[in-house]
Amino acid sequence: MKTVTTALLLGTAAVALAQGTTFLTIGSGATTGVYFPVATGMAKLINDSGSGVRANARSTGGSVFNVNALGTGELDAAIAQNDIVYYAYRGTGIQAFQGKANNKLRTMAVLYPEVLHVIARRDAGINSIADLRGKRVVIGDLGSGTEQTARQVLEAYGLSFDDLGQALRVSPAQGITLMQDKRADALFYTVGVGASAISQIAQTVDVKVVPVGGNQASALIKKYPFYVRYNIPARSYKGVGATVPSVAVQATLVTTTGVSEDAVYRAMKAAFDNEAELKGLHPSLATNFSYDKAVKGLPAPLHPGAAKFFREKGVSVR
Ligand code: GLU
Image (cartoon, helix red, strand yellow):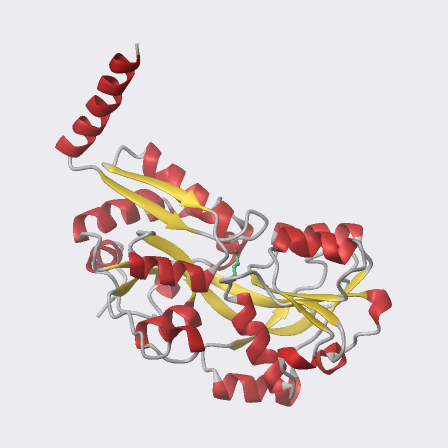
């Protein structure tokens, strides 16, 4: 019986190889973020299309882990913040990438804005980022882009992680629990509006969204040009009745030169050709995605397979 099973498995793999099937493991983020549902949905579109590409989404710590894993070949594609992709491509910007430029990184598409959410317990007396001094703050997961955002935004207010009472480097799921149990006063998360982690906190804890604006936002954008100002719309979360100014970067689907033009083209065609289906994967895509915006502000060159896809869609790409 065992032999039969092995033979069958080998048989399937052999057929896949004979047909030139490419397997893509897509790095995403925490299950309560937005990368994960988007990557899972894209993998399903790719698998259902009979494109000859097989994809699966993997939950990870976030952008920094993802671009590092693209470098080692552990991932074939990933969603990551555009600022983090750029720093990895150039080997600059953040300490983890200094002198380690990965010039094989390629963009497939810019997807949607990822907005800095600073969520504070209403009973913690936090009205501004400056009030985070001495507080217990969730700064993002290990390998997250959020941690980098948190460091840069605190810096714009003259603070570092050392000025916090505690800098808690935990997953969003653990962050939810810490906020609920009053073991954390505030939480940073750079994520598409509507992320389930933020919704879950807002539904179970009395919170406010801390603004990032004014001169501090200007200084941040000047120093780190991938940020744009972005207002979190009123009523995006339970109990948050007013629009709150913040900043955003862009979620970007990336791969490497190691994946062929043909495979990337077929994956793009499967996941992006039907715009309504793609937008159905998450409200962040529904509100923000367009083919024109998908090729604007690229953090690394467009992969030839993606360029071919967008050209066919009538989008002008260089
Ligand atoms: N931008 C976050 C990060 O890189 C992940 C957001 C998500 O998973 O949707 O840490």
